[in-house]
Length: 286
Ligand SMILES: Nc1nc2c(c(=O)[nH]1)N[C@@H](CN(C=O)c1ccc(C(=O)N[C@@H](CCC(=O)O)C(=O)O)cc1)CN2
Image 1 (cartoon, rainbow, N blue to C red):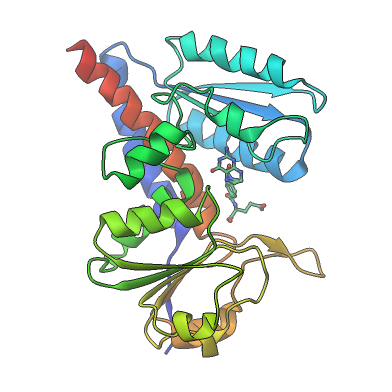
Image 2 (cartoon, rainbow, N blue to C red; image 1 turned 60 degrees about the horizontal axis):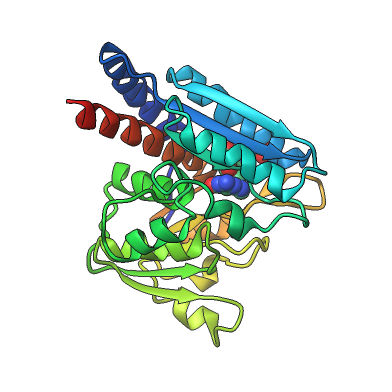
């Protein structure tokens, strides 16, 4: 078997066209959806991600504002900026790029962003909404992965989904979104015993650990759908995921590549969230 590639780059481009049309319609109601991104420091990977966000946000017509703060900024200064942007009516969505330098408590930052503007869905209010099955803002990566699975018509209800990794950004919200769509969900992590007996049962396997080559073809169920969230650099400096792609692609029905799979869909998930918030602004005005 050679797996179908779940092409995040292609799906993201298609999604951008849809968002662009929606933004045009919003502009007819005098609403320009606004996204503010705060970047602290000079982490090179974060700089790339923020640049990609800016390029795509501007392409679909968002009012994009970047606030680049020095790595030495104090927590109070950062919180002050967040509070100002919380009050700014031009800003529909506000996010702080992770990771943050050690002097800043990410939990405090996430919970200072007004929940209705928290487009990352990292605040306690939005996490609660996610797990309660309510409407809310949900993190970009799992949101984007769900969109990718829907685009390729991957059945979810009743499927056994195994999520490896329990981070707040990917693993936990991914499990919640799969559960909301009636998958039977197992979360595995560093303390899980006999990981491979679990991965071999998965109809949908999401790998979000940050360990190159963790999962190979022998570890998966024939015909599984495998989503690789990993972003690692190999010895040659090449970007690779958490799976051994060639062997997995021999056994899986569908698989995401790295790059070009989940990465572009993370930004799609974010843009979808901002556009949804701006649409809500129109409904409230009507
Ligand atoms: N506040 C947040 N911080 C971080 C998040 C997040 O969702 N919110 N996620 C990641 C970084 N991230 C978005 O912010 C992100 C990661 C990767 C990509 C991407 O397009 N990857 C490309 C490869 C890019 C490269 O060459 O390095 C791909 O996979 O094809 C976009 C966004 C952590 N921080």
